[in-house]
Length: 304
Picture 1 (cartoon, one colour):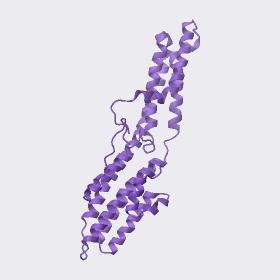
Picture 2 (cartoon, one colour):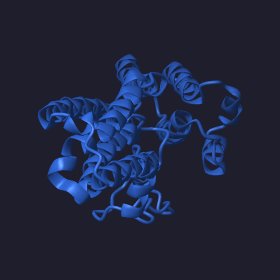
Picture 3 (cartoon, one colour):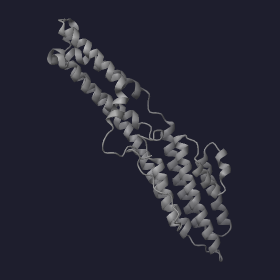
Picture 4 (cartoon, one colour):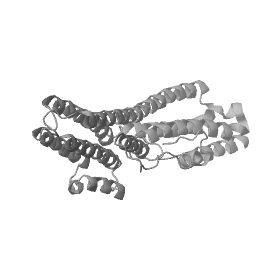
């Protein structure tokens, strides 16, 4: 995710360079023809009609960008909910006392184990959503809870939640949890499952392809018609005006394209690595650990 307040103009221009070059080249051709005295019917396109076309195109682009931002923001809300559920899970598995016999030591080990399961789950979900190989760090987290075998599963985060549910049932059978505590903790697992389901829905449901194809097509049509409509008013400055307007429309279109998939892009997507590390640090501090990993910091204005 971009966190720098200063935009990278080089990166912005690189993303829209090709369509801008086409628009500029055509406007230059129109300008040359006009300067050399060509006054054919093509140069009599009413400016009002182009203005109406541009207004409709702007509305379309705005709607598309808002829809893409909605997907990005929903992903961030879901991961914010995961942060809260992870904290609730940690508080409960650590603080719930055993009400059957003297099992303080076993209860403490159980709480630490379940917290480390949750830490491994958060990192596994990050890799799962980004569809990237599991890092050695995440594999070590799974080793810590004897869950390395789960890497063979198609949906590793879901398998981890299933294993956590089975461990809760074992703890209840051993007298470490009451029935009420078991139900409460299972409710937290259900909420975490809902968060994962929401993220997978966003990842597995592509943005409508019509929203990608038609805006690009309409921008190109508009960029071709624009110099024909304004050449008589702006004369030799037509290429400059066309370039500025085309640049604005292309940037708006590119913003929507960058936001439509909040998980696959590290530059424009949700900062899953930073959030995962924040959860890990927070949860391990609740266990009293002091050898904590460092928070993820932005690199060149990008928070991963």
